[in-house]
Length: 85
Image (cartoon, rainbow, N blue to C red):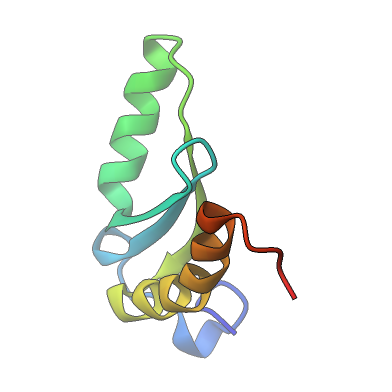
């Protein structure tokens, strides 16, 4: 469970939260502060610019790191062309 599905683990201050982002075109993950992502998204909207990164997890930095660790093997398989189990 993450902070969105478990209120007991909610980020006390969303401004201090982080987000795990995924890029299909780059087959990459990225973690950044939630407020930075929202600022970039607002700028992209104002400029009518498409964003490649999709948010997967919102939570503490540690929760985002843990989610990224679970997803890295999948991305490594995709990069190498090895089929998933």
